[in-house]
Image (cartoon, rainbow, N blue to C red; front, side, top):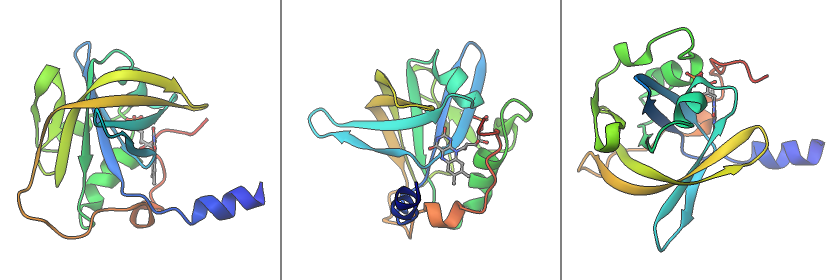
Length: 162
Ligand SMILES: Cc1cc2nc3c(=O)[nH]c(=O)nc-3n(C[C@H](O)[C@H](O)[C@H](O)COP(=O)(O)O)c2cc1C
């Protein structure tokens, strides 16, 4: 519907990279569908496409990690958004460390948290993973602008959409 497109094109959310680990596999992808969804308790929801490698690993994970990137970290966004874990090992190309519950934390992120999966919600072709933060970190300094959707629109998703 044309009206919906006009609405959606006005949105410019901060982007994040969501990682998951389960069954000896690591996964992660660039995510634009994400927001805080509760104040008490603090909860945050990330929406993962059912076709993504990350979704298949996340389904079996108890925790996920969510990372914010700086605007100049577009190469990291290209790796996580423009390549699929079905074909490449993204984690061979980045600095990462294990965290709470076996989560995978990207060490160059500006800010991150590990969240316990409290709920899942079927949103259509994406599933919402409602997360309760259990560990968090990042850079102490306030930092510059974060990477947003407008900075990443020209990245072709690494996993076919259908
Ligand atoms: C600008 C942009 C926004 C995206 N937003 C999401 C999103 O919200 N949720 C999602 O699951 N995938 C999203 N993707 C797609 C995945 O990041 C992409 O297909 C990735 O290569 C999947 O990797 P994987 O198969 O290793 O999980 C987005 C991609 C781009 C370029």
